Length: 445
Image 1 (cartoon, rainbow, N blue to C red):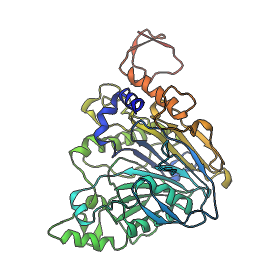
Image 2: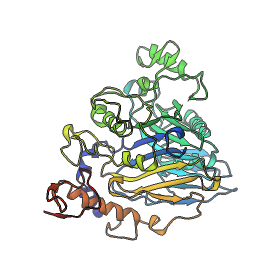
Image 3: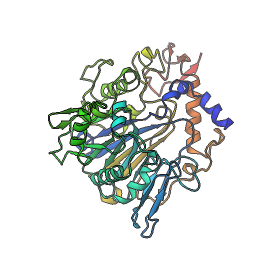
Image 4: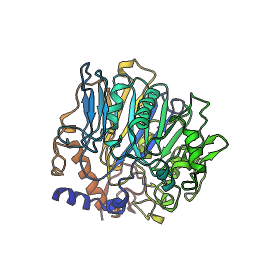
């Protein structure tokens, strides 16, 4: 525990986000016609603190356990005996022999899942349909969904059935993809959810906020929702003790009904959408103080995994809002020191099935890490450096991939305002804040 406190203290900006670290992460999704090679891309920064993460392969089985009980909150559900092989990035220590917070992975059917983007909810929503203490949560979600689905849409359906029947312990955004499509799903209350198919030619950058707007549930190819959602929201809107928003003439605006859009969101959430859209669609000039942003946009240029990595590494890079520079207004950036891993899940269409999936993984904060492409997720094992046991290890232990990259972040963060001399120009520069040719040599002042 002492080592954990030392590590967190060394992370500079970490303390600025301690109070809201539970509501963390940033998601990026890109449809196949918006990418450079026709792949679907789903990605997310996992932001929680300083404990380590692992990368594992879970083997397929035809005789697996038929009951799952979460060691995190007691959530219990039945499972099929047959489970697909899948990857995951769980927390560094097991809880009573169980891996928790699997977060991201791809199964042997080339279906990817990222869970979760923690959401916010309003008081009226909770009055209408409160969260369930021992319902499904982020800690167990990947392990009870990903091994049992064969398409992105099936992932939404399986998770949706569990939420409706057993309840959810949290408000979350969840991403599913296969080679054909991406579905983004939001759990807005204890038993309600909605999902939208990401347009093939567009992308979205999603913060910790419910962002799915008006639902067209007659269009089942692009929208899904929990049973009788419209009737429930209508009833809740007419209940004088609840007065839930979001219902208008037979339709539901999911974000208005279940999310928040307040002063906290203006600092913590909306600026991240602005930053991601600034990078991917620079032709669209917008103010960082807008009260709402279009969810799905077309990129100015086709998007590669490297470009997604640039978004997830951004701290308002190159702007006056940069947290490594002036940090004007103190907006919460996409990349923060409390990131513990960042993943880009790529499902390709131009190669044989057995080579289609790539899990790009950057341990710790992506701004100070490297995205390694794990070709391919039909692997049977992962490198030993990604499975080193123990959560609060010595950060100088180079046998651990996580602590190697986390230590790099600690060193860089400590000097983020240090001025350097660019030997090629003789001028002072901040190597982190400004874009500098990486081939140039620099020395400390």
